[in-house]
Length: 539
Figure: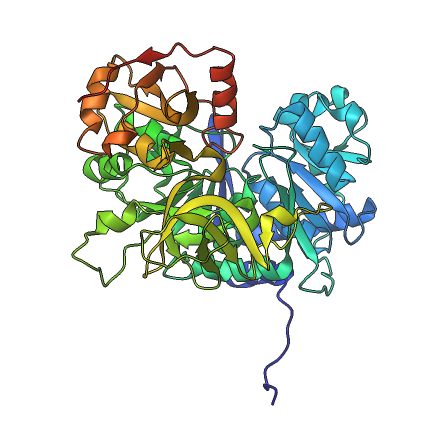
């Protein structure tokens, strides 16, 4: 027996229409150097129609890849909505990629068109001669375009068009957007999102058990729009009618504090390093309107969560996901029914609780399925309607297990669906047959009042095979000693985790999306770039 329900396709076109027709008065604010500009959803939607008309006139066909090399701003949002809705494929380009990787992903995706913000022209110009498939470059904003050769003006293209574009009917499984992984190992890999996967991900993100965005919210989107579609927030905010605040540049410190004080967001999303940076300020920051800060991309130390609650009265909520998972897969709200007398913080420090719509399991090295007991450690595998089943133009069977994506994250899963991530598979430390979590050790070190950041890598050891090396960024004006840090850790980690080797650095290297880049750290250690201090461990 079949249902009586209508079989309407799930298309980004209809996310666009809903926001345009129902939430036309909601606003998009772009924060720029020296000021800001804003537009209503209705005004943005009109420009989206003009952009689609202009791209059609330029010859953009269904399935063509249109790259965006842009900051978080209104124009980038217009491309988010126009390109997929017209049947082309939005390819968000990471403006922080090294030149060789940037050229690789543009060529690999076979982008025909690129929209670039004028301030980013020098970065794109550095690879212009290596781009094999790019036919047209469109520049948003004013600047010297000579380094790119012949270009077109974004605003002039839109000015020549009329509103009222007729959006086509598409297959919901057609490609809508694509994003490449950050390439921490090997070349970046392309993930292609469908209209259907984006639609379902948008609904999951709007659920009250997740971000729960509504028309009464104002979301500050700090996470870059080139990183997994800004965690899907532009689409979710558009569908919900949530006002969007978009920083034109990567804002940190005083600039970011000023945005909070001026625009009073209710929600904000960004990587932990962004939030850690705010704690270093003496500037008063108004968090009175903020009901939730989401952090992802790296583990959030308990010390950071507690510091925000104590100083700002603001709640940091962890989320977990990957480019391959669209990215929302887990979200860390504490449960109503807590087991074994645990408090809220017990759950807040976990990576998150599995969201409805995806399945997660833990698998041992030998392929054995492990129980969800909060103790059995293995690699997380995931599947669901917004999880990738392959990489674009690449066969990588090692990443997939009978329909499940191997995430590369190691940890435990409990009976309530909460994930605790202990490491990446490539970062696990095996010392004398015992396992050490670099993530938990980092978080313990960062709880020390003199430590701003800490990252842990595995280094060879003649006796134990591997031991942890801790790279510490001290807080300004502080000089923690290895012996003092070891003493601090004694009551916080198992004895065999206590590190003998320490190095003090001005900055921990990070990937293009803000994660600790341990590949660079391991190379620096191998080259002798770290001045390593050794300290005897307590008896």
